Length: 126
Image 1 (tube, rainbow, N blue to C red):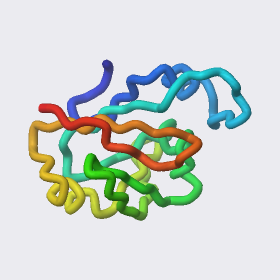
Image 2 (image 1 turned 135 degrees about the vertical axis):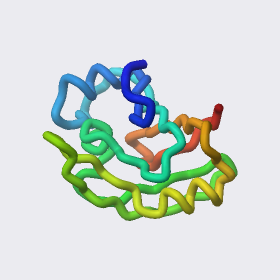
Image 3 (image 1 turned 90 degrees about the vertical axis):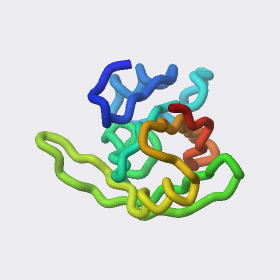
């Protein structure tokens, strides 16, 4: 995994399509599986442009997150310039962390399935 300590790291088979394409291809029949990425504990969840494009967050500026108890919460997202790019900031993230007992030093593993359209919290590890 490559990235700074507070960066979102994409770890799924979909990483190749994330790096090579501008948009997610819904008509693609290959079974690459879900987009999987790791978010380290931070008070601001900054979604990278590639992940935002694949998930559609760049267009809707909204994200639904399902926690480990299968409770879905809806969050607004704000586009924020970041050097030569844009990061998408999830509003209410600090509260979501607190509500889900996620603490400093923890990492959240999320899965995104395009046909469902939500981020699933698959695991928390420290």
